[in-house]
Image 1 (cartoon, helix red, strand yellow):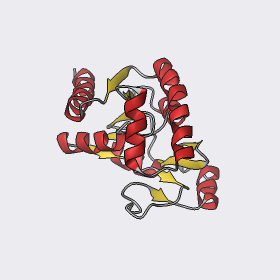
Image 2: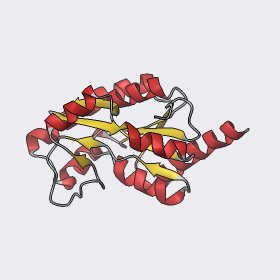
Image 3: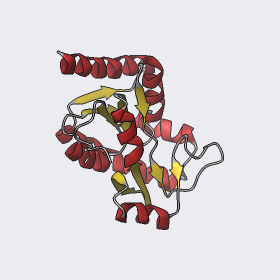
Image 4: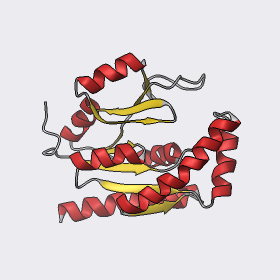
Length: 196
């Protein structure tokens, strides 16, 4: 297996509270930059009707997920809102070996684990313009019950507080294209610094 610390590609970690627009931002970044690979996380949460296995997430049972942890097949993993999430190590390793920039869209817990493996990772945290906007986005998303949405909102402030300690770049997602432009600039600046 490829040594994760001695690969040609770069790692970009994108995090933020539920409903802030991380997935949309990451998809837009991939459209704008060549040689970028968006890592697909694995989860034990149930798949919604609109989701496709291997596109939004790799959906697995808790037993399968725990087996992957035991076998060291996950780069990082965390339990979030009662479900497990993690990043398959082999997919990241393969993309890095090809010299790609790999975007990990993961939560703060996972980001801290991934940063320990990739100390040069670019850390970007996506902030909502306001708590009110975040609540509206979660409501429009329609994925959560009222109780689940409230739990996610309460967790957002803890996540944002932790982000100030661990992330170099903070991007407010008020205007999507502006936020995408900022993220693209952060990534391209890092690539320029690395090749200088």
